Length: 319
Image 1 (cartoon, rainbow, N blue to C red):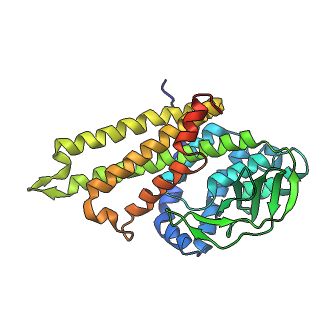
Image 2: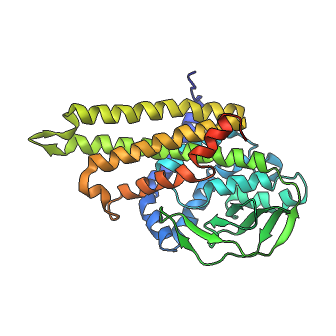
Image 3: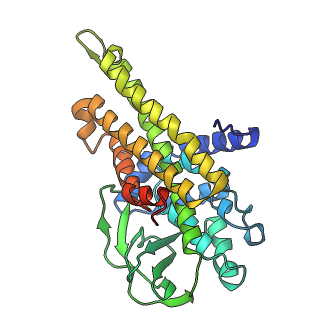
């Protein structure tokens, strides 16, 4: 099935792409990796003003209503530009806190406006690690008793992606909901992660194609070699296969569809990262080279909100 974006959706993607291109996101990512949050929070505010987080918030709380297709459109661009911060986690938090009553009034307007950065630690037995728990304003922990509001986070631990800073939540906090919508929040977070991964993969492919066209070996561009062309064609096919999976899942929001989309998009992005690393040669292994920001993001997203094996089990109906 071929999914085509309408004019409004394409204009939204173009506007967000222009905003993020002008923001010089690689430098923002470098700052965020060092724990310097000023530029990241400024970018977060601009992304929120563009309406990104409002796509997961009902209109009565300052959003535009739940619009998963537009959310996927936005998160492809966030991934393409490796925007740092707990973006998928904030979407999950918006779903968890939408009780139509006190919690929604208390938290959702801030999430929609960008004033509130939220993170979530999903852990079936106690408190786990929360992405950017040190930077978030609202820290939610999924525990056996229900949803708790943690007052703080422990020492930050670096992950494979330096921009993904992990911190354990403090094992205390207000129990704000005994039966929050876990499954629905998980589906929204997985969709956001899948769309991010698709954007990362597309950026890696574009960067690698441009590089092999200018890099020469034996007096000719590397991109003229048949083996290189075949490798990049495989990546292109995987990404083009993942794209309708992501937008199809946004239409249905069925758990199996969302899991399939995440699996497809993350595996395609991971394949794009491996091809990019190989075809860039030695420079691709240097952390100073900007390509590394996308390489590490692709690897980290692959395991976020459900590793490949877990998503396969959901698709097969085993969970």
